[in-house]
Length: 573
Image (cartoon, rainbow, N blue to C red; front, side):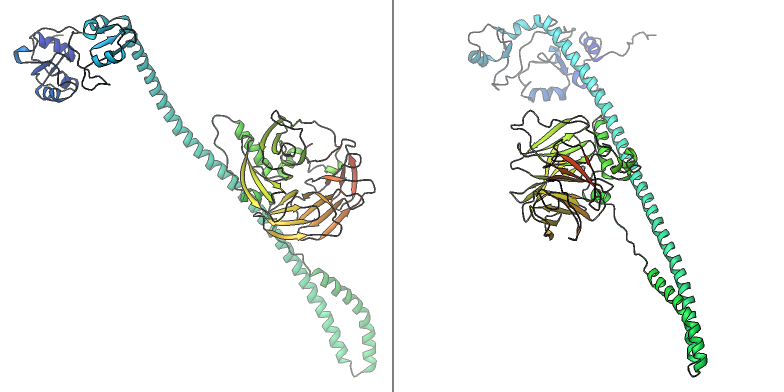
């Protein structure tokens, strides 16, 4: 309900129109837009605005408005102004700072000052802005611009809402990622605590068993000692009595044999086997290689699954065996069969592939040395895809430290280059070490590198420094090397006919066993399975694979006439 003589709250523009009609006092428009009510003392024709004394003073000082036409006092308009007024141009030219924009070029759809038109638009049709501006207002182009601006306003509002949603998602993703990392860490800690408890329980059981054995041996020692001292006492008491001494000695003689047997047994039993804790080589390698706790992936589970498959390979042995059933059936009892072949030649290979060496990263990945194309290739067994890293020099050997790190040897340069395998199956150069000689094949054993030349075996630390060099009269021409999992043993193979084709050493340089074969054997490939069974390629013979026991006894031949040169054991294959 309206009160007579009063009006509802009006907008600044409405108030301004009423003020011009004489109904109300005229107020400053810039101040009104800020919510302030100041009486206007002047009016700018160029800006079509009423100004208070303060705003008017500033308006007359600013370079952009100092030349505007100002009406004050009784000269201020007393009637409602039209929405658009035709007034003098006041915008300063961006190219000529002392000139005002007054003209419009129809040909180039551009505005400018007089200098602009003379310099750049001599031959163009020119109009004065003051003559055409009123027709432009509310025209088609004006409406189109307004629509575009309105559309832009909607778009920026949508972007703002999207940014607000993204900000919430960022906070949520951060919170969830932190939560997942801590949860995974707890799982690892729980696993390690459980493994530690089981190991301590085994040690305590061994200690308890040994203590019981010691107690039994102590009781036996005490009993035998009493018998010996009793006999000694009787013999000393009868020393001056010949008859009694003779009788006692004959009676004791039978007991002495039994005592001697007991003493020998006791001396043997007191040698209790000492035991020590042996670290898991897989776990130790994982710690030394600084394998990351995980990866940050962008909305895809593929990388996570890939990391999980690699992590399974880190703790090889029982975990993998549980999935494949190899612990329940010995490898020597299993039959070998041809599964598939993978063409590793890719489009940018200049030459045919010549595979010098290969190594198993995990059941789904093999790292391959291609000598003809001077490169390292990563083969995805599951998808039969190949990724490649080109090299300047020809490599000859490769070894796997962990699923994220491999070592490649360059004998001509006397160097070993390490490469990182990323979660996206990319090969990236890591660090490089210099070695004292050129190795054509290498293997990794715990924290040591074992390299072979034609006639020697050298053991180095992970920095390439020589620890020990092994030599043996049986060594003639070495071709390959393989370490025994969770052991201090390794094998080297020969390609010289008439010699031992397989030698087994410990890391201290002792020759443990040898394997000879009457058939022509040119051993070029060598691998040791998890249960200690040895696989050797009979390349010069019938192309078969020999299966050999850990003490170098032949079990059987596999896959004859396939011309094998290199091989690697794949769990479950």
